Image 1 (cartoon, helix red, strand yellow):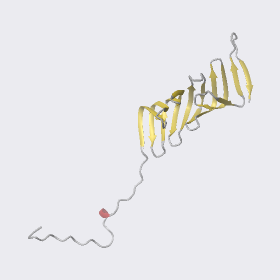
Image 2: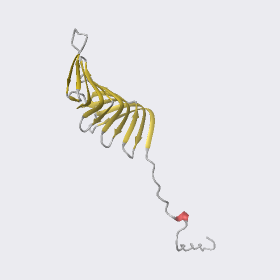
Image 3: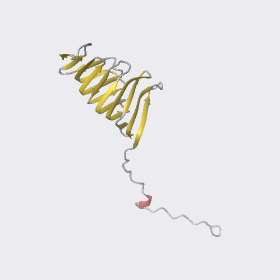
Image 4: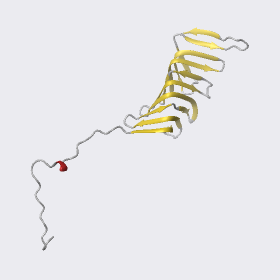
Length: 186
């Protein structure tokens, strides 16, 4: 301000605004991903009881798809706040939106609650249904017997399970004998 007079602002230019004054162009946003090695994760239900816990060699979380990918994880699945099934697999995808865990690359699991164990090529656990499904060269066993089939469907603790096969094979070890009995059926 000189001599009590302030400079007047210049009038706004007419026509197209200059490049610096234009609104910035929208750019595509890259998916949000988190990668970490040697991670442990857990998920709880609405009451704060554990649903599952996992530890893995690596974890990758994608917020856009609401999934988490894990390599060589060890899982504990819970029912009513108590450990129901312990499992491990080569790779896992956890779908947080659908509350489904996809296990792949050779899956092994056991339930201390029921005493049953299984091995399969792949499996899927559904939180809402409280259901475990396993496919491909399924082996299901307890201390004195084992059964083989193509698919296993059961509850999380394997207290109720159904083995489906074509044909399913059941081997029962009899006390005092060297060879187990074998029964085949559909």
